[in-house]
Length: 481
Ligand code: ADP
Ligand code: MG
Image (cartoon, rainbow, N blue to C red):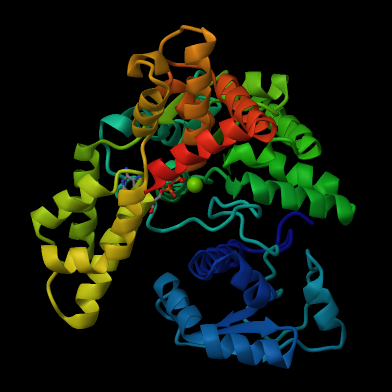
């Protein structure tokens, strides 16, 4: 049966079913997937009678729990949809079979016979579908929208692509959209923003919204494995292939996971061939995804590839100003400049530091000042001050081996410069959070495989040659203090 209300349902019933699906969707958004599944999924709408709504739950325990924890919220949600509703009544489903039935994924409608305002009890499918979210989607963070995303030089291209895809999904040339960049630079934020925008627009148009599914590559893998275990891979594939917009975050997670990669590749092809939009994020560009099958890598790079660059001072200041405004707590400009100057690694850390200052100010009822900032962030700043840069490493190592600093990025391959360069790459990998491609770029635009080779070569030499090992260790200690 494909219609949840039944083929003989009247338009009014269909409307109530829609309202109910919307309410469930809202609730699910608010409480999150896990909580929804634990407590709320088994709710069944029995009736809307005059000003009273009757909701059934399979056990007494569940009924009490749902009434106690979500009763008021459900009532408020009903009232925003149908102002005439005054009460939501929770009851235990009648009959011994009820519980079993409620546990089944797609319950069958009960026969008629309820003395209610409805010919048949309303039983929407387990998950609402008309709010634009797929069964598979992880919850979206309400803070991650386009409104709260601050645009600057380093992210303007990625942002423009994200906007474009949100406005017109599956435009040729923008499918797939591949977003990449280092940790904490806004990949997840942009993906959620796209998903929100598509869902919201669907609701405004009054048309059936596009179905959007967002999940991490890790979740994708777990779901896939669970489907294999439970023998439901066909359902898994079908339900994934029924979405209009699929967003997969942190794709690098699939490196080396061959079976999952294969499945993703098939899903990917099926969706793109069907005119659906795919959006993928990763910490590396497609070309650097070593360990991802060639044909998948090729397809990933065939749409639009956009990177989020490391932040600039200006962008950091703009982000801080925006966050201060949202928080509504005054923070002196000097403090913002101080933070933007000191915390350069990524937006997440920057945001974290600002939140600490604001929390501290709220807790003690004192304004944020330069002094309090230094005090509250002392431990963080100490760590940051100790963090060396690739450039410092290159300088120290060049000095130590008595070669020119410029040789660190020169194409010269003579042993007397190549070896120190390898040592510097090795130390850069050990002492900084930079990725292999980033390190390669700082050594005259070398490939990440060159860095990888340098790292393993130096480690190998350190095993074989104690004098060399001591040398490298000495350099490391000097750089660390
Ligand atoms: P990533 O997924 O790239 O690791 P996130 O999207 O999780 O990074 O971003 C980390 C944090 O920084 C989030 O709280 C996000 O809202 C914030 N952030 C990142 N970039 C921006 C931006 N341009 N404007 C506002 N907030 C941002
Ligand atoms: Mg992320």
